[in-house]
Length: 212
Image (cartoon, rainbow, N blue to C red; front, side, top):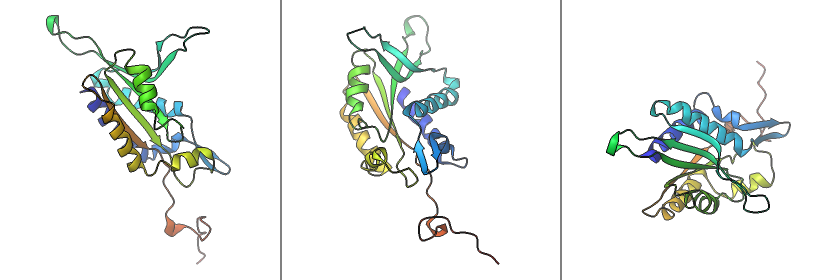
């Protein structure tokens, strides 16, 4: 099952992000007043590159910003998927089947449409009009204390915890999956690790080493 394979791969990406080498740092820009998430396109690139490397033995075709609808000047806009996945099943003769396609839509947790784009964008724009059966909705969860204050951080914080957001999106994916379509939702924890409270001073800054 293609979506099972993709979900398992993303679980390994999650381990890389929050594991020993803290790959999550690469998803952030450091500023003088704190940290700010890099653009959604950067997260999409990280996901696509990981899937391609992680699943290379399965011979998946992984594409970024694939055009699935050409725009018409003065008319309907063009449509590009964040990540497109294709796999050609094995088989010859009568057993041969056409390629299986999946679309991955990626959002940052600050995006105003994070709770609606699964239906309005992934389903209505990409899957249904182009008869694509499989869709994966991936949200990078960035809420953490070191994120500089602003509208994006406040919007992300209103989504609750990473587990709460995950449960909400998984329920939404199930409700949008009739017999002819299958959706999954994955929330990647992209938050920077918090400092150990026991090592911080009263104002939230690291304590200076004591002189002996």
